[in-house]
Image 1: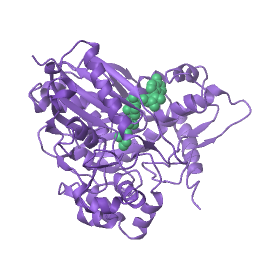
Image 2 (image 1 turned 180 degrees about the vertical axis):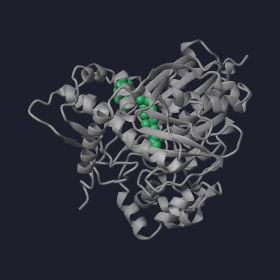
Image 3 (image 1 turned 90 degrees about the horizontal axis):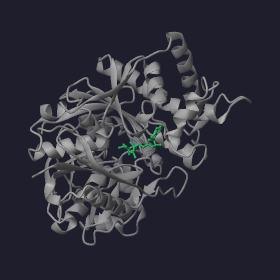
Image 4 (image 1 turned 90 degrees about the vertical axis):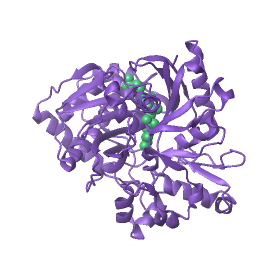
Length: 497
Ligand SMILES: Nc1ncnc2c1ncn2[C@@H]1O[C@H](COP(=O)(O)OP(=O)(O)O)[C@@H](O)[C@H]1O
Ligand SMILES: O=P(O)(O)OC[C@H](O)CO
């Protein structure tokens, strides 16, 4: 009997595997952090082999932890950090360079060139994206330009490109399947989100041969089967979606106008806009949302590059805290930040400003500034950045957002969620399961094989854990936001010559 659906959640800082049952309960979980490689300031890489090894080992661990067997697993759903780029040799299966991570800024100048070449509007209209080093296209071009012999090999058809979903599918099927889904393709800046095909003009511009690219499929459906020896039984890989689209699905935001915000390494606010691809004039992205019935749905997205990563920075580099959860205790030990603002623009700043040359800034420090104020300012920065996006989203979608569904690691922080509600002036809803990214992938894979019937079947699983109600005067909110606006202004164009 099929008891579980397996979700493989390959995030920016860790690989995770969760086995869910029919009610959406977590039955087993295994997680492993992996190395972040910073070869130069502003550059970020991962080792693709470590990503694959960690993902496989947590999958095996999650199964054995509860004594499950592979034949009890109905299907596998994959969800992943998006945009991160891997190029490998089809014959050997070996990457020709480290994965260039979504946060990496090395191709910022290449994107400046694209803008000078007058392609900004074309890229926006075709891909829904604002040209930026964040997306995969310029990363693939960088690898082809900098790895010896790579361009020639690519032209001969010897190389394959993939985002992390594609890399995992390739390895799970031992090189049988080279595929991605619509949501991941929509983050490459090479995919026409209206025609649902790779865009030849952009490929030509970056000199990327089309033969490197994976086949693009709906997010829910059979991608392939795991090789028998891997788990002792061949399991269908029946779902794949970028992690933010997967979280939107896992939060059951199936209808136009529904919104979620995920507080992970970065923070991503997505609104389902249904069959309509809403174009933003103010720094939001148009992207493809995951759906279970093969129809294409769209979303508006505000991407914040640094959220929980600022907390990791406090832990690992500043050594101010021992673990992320300690931030709540420090933040509530003081009344406010004593006027301190931290703008964590470590890798430039994303929506709605899009300045790749912005850098991290701390302002407002006085002699009385304590560690507690600093930590509180780091948490508050997530809420301020979210507010910047939510206001633009309301304006552009014409939808007034009254409640915000939240998830991701940092949504466990009660101080942050209360402050978020106060700053937005809306109710913040935290579900019982904040692993919605993995849950979304499980739903996509489970619906594809009939483990769940349809979206109505899974909607019943969504359960509220806590509502945070706004409790701040308008005057105080205005005062705090005014300070934030000034602080963000100080971070812009820091490293531009
Ligand atoms: N209680 C907490 N308070 C603040 N930040 C937290 C807390 N718990 C986790 N985080 C932050 O959330 C992030 C982990 O969330 P997760 O959803 O697992 O991220 P990802 O999928 O990007 O790896 C880390 O950056 C961590 O610093
Ligand atoms: O690893 P996360 O959860 O912060 O997500 C990363 C995003 O997919 C980047 O676009």
